[in-house]
Image (cartoon, rainbow, N blue to C red; front, top):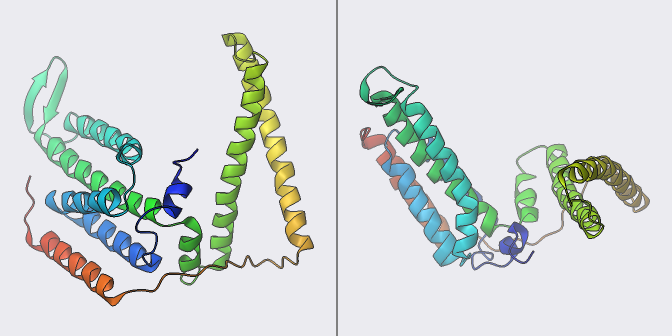
Length: 252
C-alpha cells in the first residue's frame, strides 16, 4: 500500500522537524484538551493539528479523513447515548427516548475532546516515523518496554503480510465462494496463521541470536536538529492554550 502510515510518516513535509518537538506538542496539547471544561480549547487543538497535517505536512486529505472519521462516528454515538442516559432535566422526548440536558452538555464536551485528542495523536503518527519515536522514548522509559513495543510493531506487519498472502491464495482457489466454504476457509486461515507467525518469530530470534543479540535492541538513527524558534512557538502556543483552558468558563 502506497499510503500507509509508515510511508506517510517517512514522506511528509514535517519529517525534518525534530521528533522531540512533535512529541512535546502532542503531549501538552492532548493533556490540556482533555482537562479543559470549555469546548473551544479542544476545538482549537483540532484546527491547529488539522492545519499542520494537511497544509504543513501535506498529508492527503482523504487519508486524514479516513483515519479521523471512525473517531467522529464513535464521538457522535457517545453524544447520542449520553443525551438520553445521563442527567435528570428532560429537554424533549421522541417516542420512548428521553433526551436530557446534562447528558447533552457532557456529550458535546466529550465529542470535542475526542476530536481534539484524535487529531493531535494523528499529527504525531502521520509526521513521525515510529523508529524515531522509539529512539526518543527510550531515553525516558524502560528500554525493555520499548524493545517489546518495537518487536510488536514489526510483527504486526509480518502478521498482516502473512494473512494477506494466505487469504489471496484461498481466494484464487474459490475458498470464499459461499458461506459454508468461507467459514471453513476462515478457520483454516486463523489456525495456520498462528502457526506461521510463531515459526517466523522463532526464526527472527535465532537470526538475532546468531548476530550477537544480548537482550538489548540498538536503535541507530540520526535526529534532525532542534530549532529554538520552533520550540518557542510550540511553548507559546501551549501557554496560550493552557491560559484559555484556565480562564474560559464552561460554555455549556
